[in-house]
Image 1 (cartoon, rainbow, N blue to C red):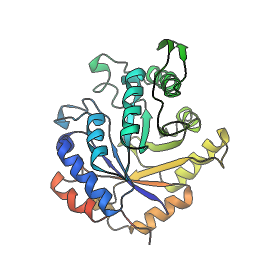
Image 2 (image 1 turned 30 degrees about the vertical axis):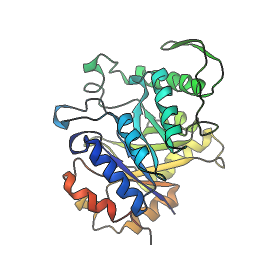
Image 3 (image 1 turned 45 degrees about the vertical axis):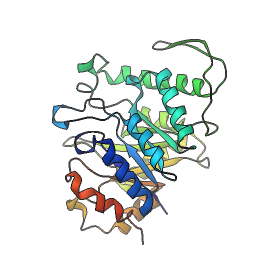
Image 4 (image 1 turned 90 degrees about the vertical axis):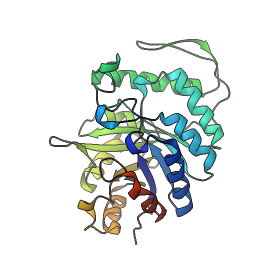
Amino acid sequence: MLRCALNLPNFGDFADPHRLVDLACRAEASGWDSFFLWDHIRAGSWAGPVADPWVALTAVATATERLILGTMVTPLPRRRPTTLARQTVTLDHLSKGRLVLGVGIGWPPDVDFADLGDSGDDRVRAAQLDEGLDVLTGLWSGEPFSHQGEHYRINDTQFLPPPLQQPRIPIWVGCMWPRRRPLRRAARWDGIVPLSHDPETDFRPPTPAELAEILAYVHRYRDPSAPFEVTVGGSLSDPAEQDRPAAEVLGAYEEAGATWWMESIGWPLRPYEYWPDYVSAGPPRQG
C-alpha cells in the first residue's frame, strides 16, 4: 500500500510556522506518513509572505515523533552545500533520523534565481546540483573531504557529526518528464519525484502510464531490486478531481511502481481554513 505524504507551500497562508506545526501535529495524529514543505525563497509577488522551510521544519520536528520530514524540493544551486550540510545533519539528529532531502534545480528560473543574482540558466543550475550533491554527501561522510570543481572548492575539511541515518540522509530527486538527464541523476540516489511537462500548465503529475515509462528508463541505470522510493503527487482534494475515487487513482499509481502518494494542499486550491479538518480526516485510502 502506498504511503501518504502532505506537500505544502512555504508561502502565502502557509508562511505562518504556527499553522505548519498545527497541521503537522494533526497529520501525525490522523495517520499521514510524511510532511514536506516547498523550498522557495521568493516565489513571486503574488505569493505573499514566505517562510524559511528549514526553520519551519525544525519547529515541526520538535512537535512530532513519527512523521518523516523534508523539503520538496530544495534547489541546491541556491543553497550553499556547506550550509545545507550543517542544516540537514542538525535536523536529522533533532528528528531522530526522520529527514528526507528532496532536491532539484529549482523553479521559476527568474523570480527565485536570476532576479536575486543566481543563475537563471537551467543547464548551469543542473551542473551545480550534480556537483553540489557530491560535496554535500562528501561532507555528510564525517571523513576528511576535499573537492575541486567548477562551482565548489573544499580544502581538507571534516564535518562532524555525520548524519544519524546511514549510509546517508535519503535524497529524492525532482525530475521533469520527458527530460532524460534528470532521470539518470535520480538513478544515482534514493528516490524520484517526477513531474511531466505540459505546454499549457508548465507541469503536472505524470499519468500512471508515464510513470511506468519513467521507471523503466531509470531502472536501466540502477539495480531495479535496490530500494528506491517513487513519489507521485496531486490534489485529490481538488474539486475537479473529486469524481475520481481515491482507491482508483492510488491503485493505478501503485501498479505503475509508485511507493508514495504526495497530497498537495494549499495554494491554489483553497484558503488555509479548509485544511485543518481535511488533514485531520487522515490520508486517502486505497480500499
